[in-house]
Image (cartoon, rainbow, N blue to C red; front, side):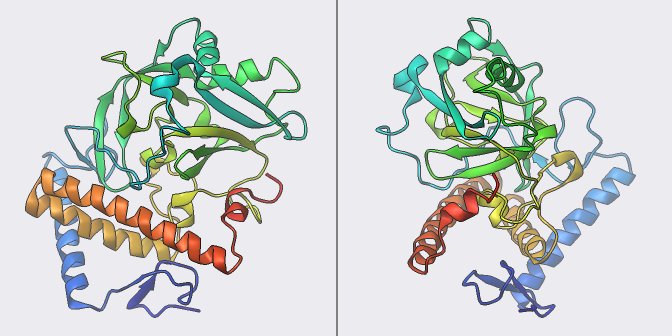
Length: 333
């Protein structure tokens, strides 16, 4: 069902049970106007040669439209997995990551422990080739993170040494599944500089629980493409737009299927883009008005609330026979 210009829905159908935003509401109009004023201010500063959140990136600098924060903000859905099912901090080298979609038909799988992956790295974790700037789709960037781990390309090459464990022929994307139920996909070209970040490069300690433990990092993509609490990496045979193709949590909620920050690929085209743009503008006002501490609290609590809402939606859709597995495991993947 089509939406009126003043009533923006977050789904493809106004009757899908997803919340909507009425952009004719005076309060929403006011927030949008404030956001536009801030954007115009940045444009004027940039034209005058001053600092701007969208300034050209020479070395480490924020993604277009982002502002720099002094810490790596902790964002998740408030549903961290039990240590009984996910605890790399205790298991250490015995902690497993499942690689699936292997072999000629994609039906084979291989478990690699952190010990196996360390050996692939050469016996010890290696530094990420250059410091990683972390760009969040919600509008902030944290610059110069140092990680140690193993290059994803080296892991793929090791798997390919045996035809039974080689990634399926012609794979086009990878799918990451987390122990907390989160999932996301990454296109093959964007995996070329992928890196399994295991440790903090400055301390040598494994990435903390709040940052999700060992996780794949993709320097050219927004941070949501890096799954915390990583359990499975699957090689997919389908493109993003193929019928029945696997898509991830945020992609299902309207984020761009590819997510390259330099191209500002935040939201998928369509109604969802308008909704998320409005919400992002409203959220950013907390930073302008209340400062970084208030803004960070809003971001964290908002993520938890969304996680709770997503869980409820999952339960309700399950009652009506709309299985989540069909959204995750696409036909032909």
